[in-house]
Every structure is written in structure tokens, then in C-alpha cells.
Image 1 (cartoon, rainbow, N blue to C red):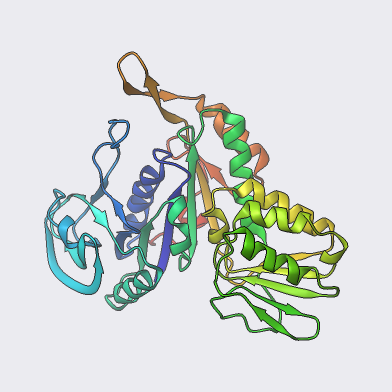
Image 2: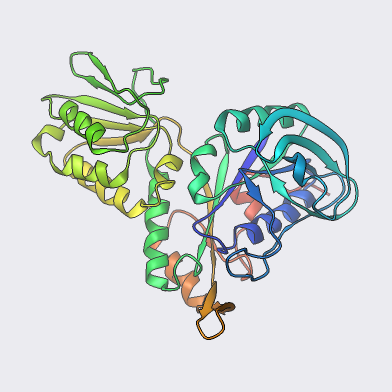
Length: 358
């Protein structure tokens, strides 16, 4: 089973529009498809701006995995509803097959262990491609995806240079190599292996406070080669302060992170990019235990503009051609497209999926 992940840098950046386009393409290619989300995703209108939002419109035969309380909220009729044993605040997740065309409300599992279990159940039902709808602040739970599609645009920031630099920094995080060392890294706690073979282990899997960062600094201050492994989240500003307080001590140090999604979920790709440049200048290596492929990036010129006189929002757009060309100019190794501005390379091919042969 191939798992496609979808995430946006903010609400209204075009994530669902992109997923709907991919849904049509994947269905036309003859794949058996399932849809689910990390948490809730199914509102008709944006609950902040009041502007219309695209929803998942599905065809008969499509499988969905959603919470019990959401099964009857869409217009699509569902059949073969099977409980999964996975529980959320909106009820038990059920797997159902769409019987009549219509829209659906998705509210899936949000814990990593539950998402893995749900993916296994979908795989056992013969699903070939699963769409996993997420968000930038829920990326850490999407580590099992085979490829990620990132959406950004003017709803993130209506200044094109800001969108461009943020997209460039995000994309750069997907190009770090896979960890090739001999040390087995499968623990769930931050640890440091020094050149004597001694392993020092932190109490937690993430570094989110100054005291924990201080412990890491002490480890890295040791002379000689060493490897720091972070399975969870490292606060990007604390990481930057920690490494920049060191200099010669960093020589021959290796930094291993679990995957790029843990870094992206912090919301500071610019900080990570700056830190990694600093480390590389000092002869350090940075890698991932589990790299994730970035299929492509989409850009969306739309943003909701607030009208103070009426205390309401109206649709607004930046220049779509300028936005697309600006992002493409700084990102050379990943395809950047505007779903509503063809032509562009085939998204199925970019996602390592094949079209059906006549």
C-alpha cells in the first residue's frame, strides 16, 4: 500500500484542493483508494474567516476511515461500516465504503501508534493508495507516509518573498542523507554516543527546555567524535543556541534526527537551515534515521483579507504568476506547481504512481 501525505503551511493554502485533484488522478488510474485524516478535517466553511472551503467529494467504491460521530455528517451514503477498535474524542474510528457520490467528513486517528494500526487494517482490506490528510502542526504523526505533498501560499503570508524563503527552507530539510552508521538507533530517548563507545541517555525523547539543552551541550563539549540522536522534537531555537555556544568542540560530531517531519513540525525551517549550515561549516554531519520523500510543492495565490469596517473576510489574491515563478526560482530539485495553472509535470509520476494502461 502506498501512503500519500498532504500538509499545508497554514489554513487555506490549497492542501485540500491539491488532495482532491490527486484523488481524481489516482482514481482514474484504477487504484483502490482510502481516505483518512490526522484529527478532524471536514468543515464547509473556515470557522475563522467564514469563507467556503473545499471538502472531500468521493465516488462509490472509495473507502474512508473516520470517527463514529462523523459517519452521517456528509452527503455520501456509506456501506460496509466496520469498527477498528481505535478510539478518539469523536468516537471509535470506523472503516466504511462509499455507496453513493457525495462529500464526507474526515476525523481520523491522531496518535502515531493508532495511525500505524489503522494503516495496517486498510492494507489488509486490499487498499492500494491511502490519502493521509494532515497539517504542519501534525506532521510528526505522519512518519509512515511514502511521499509528502506540501502546500503553501498567500494564506501563510501575503508577501511573496516571505512565502518563497519559507518554502526554500522547508524544501531544504528533505535533502539530508539517510543515517549510514553501524550503531543501532531504535530507542525513544535522546542519547549521545562518544568516541569511547559510551552511551549517555536523556530522560526524554525531545529537548524542549533550557535544562535539557544544557545537558546536550555538556555532552557535545567532550573532545573527539560523537553522535547525538534525537528521536523526537528538538526546539529549533534551543538547538541553535546550543551549537553556536560551541565551536572547536563540534569537530567530527554527528547529528542524527528521526525524520524531517519532526523538524518541520516546529514551524521554523529557517532556523534549522541556518543551524545545519553552521554545523556543515564545522565539519559536522547531519542525517535522518528515516528520510521522507517530498513529492512536490504546490503554491496558492489565495488569502482571506480582513475588512475592519465590516469585521469580515473577503477572498484576495497575490499575483499567481509571480508567486509560482518566485518559488520555482529558488527551488531547483523539487517540482513546484500551482494546481490551477497547468501545464505541469504529471503529479502521479511525481508521486511514484503509474497511470492505468488502456
